[in-house]
Length: 112
Length: 117
Image 1: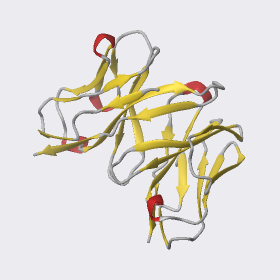
Image 2: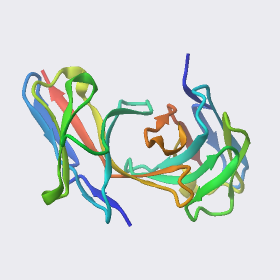
Image 3: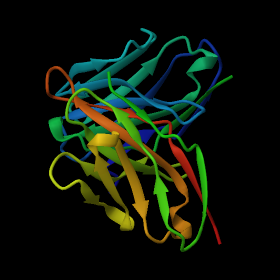
Image 4: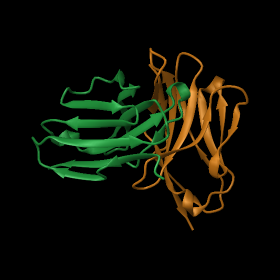
């Protein structure tokens, strides 16, 4: 049973398109996150939701819009994709203040 | 703001040799420290964490790390490396969000471990 699952695993698209990445966790956690890993492997937090409420927003361009329909799901929608958006996007979850994050296996986004 | 430095970008060790990966952090309060491992094409898996108490913490897969406040370090060690340990290793420092309901991990840039047979 996959704890944190993201789809799709790979996403190749043209500049200017809009795309979404979906994330689901079955751990019963109440907090979910999106992290971006660039080509140099640097990981940076983008967003965090707790019980469907936005908690952390790290000055990400407003082309990125997270949506949490319930505490088990956190989706990421990206409008007007740019070349610089190419990266691996990781979803993660935790039990509130637990600090221990469980990560999904990532979505590799390539913008051509 | 917290920050993490991993000075070694790439380390190569022979199978069976000992390993130490360096991590230095900057944080104004008591740090919560982590080591994660990322295998190719995979997500990050927690190896171990330090919150308080004993400064030598044991983790999974035979790894351990020692918190040294005076040196602002949290180095990862393993006495005998296996070929399957080849991966990217990330040190991270954690802080709670202002609401106290989410954890913000700041990661180092990672150290890629190569194991030769």
